[in-house]
Image (cartoon, rainbow, N blue to C red; front, side, top):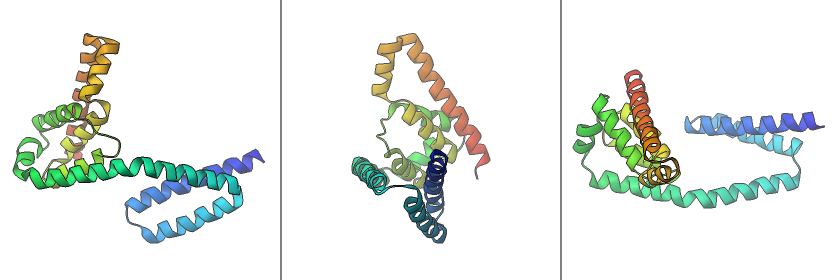
Length: 184
């Protein structure tokens, strides 16, 4: 009985991941068929209580995440309306060491709430930010922020905190350069 439930759980999560990935790619006909498959999985392997618990948890996550996503979209719109594209193109528009380093440092100093970094980064890319610097900012941003640096310093001490901060910035810069050299 437990093996059958394990198969149901695997199918459930695999189907949800496939819906997520194919939905992003815009494969709507396949997503629709995966949704039908999801209904079959739920009917065959889960009780009504489990399904209602899942739906309640999903609703709770939506209520938690949606306001932050809206803040990110608002911030992205504000950035695109206020910031001239030439500023972005001048500082982080290509895949040079300088552009990736600036993006890494900017990402390390910024504070991105969960889910706000994607629409904000999209606004920067739309304004002319290079793909490598975009990845550098996206890697450094969630790993560091100015408040985060202060907390790390208070826990690890100044020397270890500086090493950690330097490693995040250097590795983000390096990964941005590598990524930017392979992406057209």
